[in-house]
Picture 1: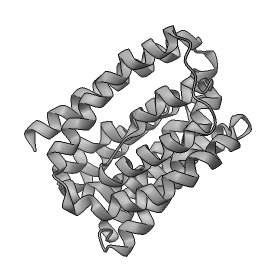
Picture 2: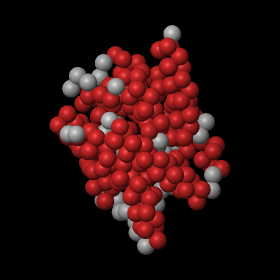
Picture 3: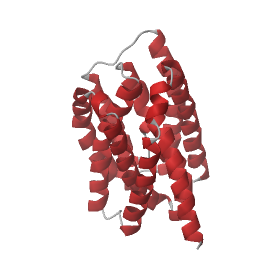
Picture 4: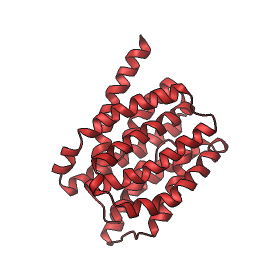
Length: 245
């Protein structure tokens, strides 16, 4: 009975997380991670998150299909896929708390970095997305979530709102599919991870479907400010997890 109530609560949380992720492109896994770690432990949480994120990104791809920049996806994924394989295979060799500490600090630093880049009118070129893909792909293989790190680079390329949401989701989708395959080969994924990941993924999908109307009506400046707030909350949350773990 307790497990049933916990799953109902997770489902409701998943819908809310899907709505938030559908509006700003990330934040879904940050919201779901604490209760999943509490219920299933940190090791099983990583493949559950990978499956959930796969479905979440697929939903955003379907919603914003016509706005996606497929050239960016191709360049990003070409380096991200081998990098995530390397990251997933080195996961067991690294201290997770130290990684989360570095990631949390980096996320908080992204806000002033993005503002500085914007003040200098700095942009990211298409070929530079390959470097971004390699770095974020490797990090995604190691930690449960890195979605917020993509944000300043995709924005600096000139993508915003639907184009940003769809392109970032399509690019990340290749990472999470690869990550799931690698985890399966390493024997990390079991039926609990599969069923829980699919269940939460479908809940997130439902939340994502509610987000499109909000995004279309939201002014671009408010859209960017909302992303900065969630980046800050994400960074603080990851730092807290690194200290408590």
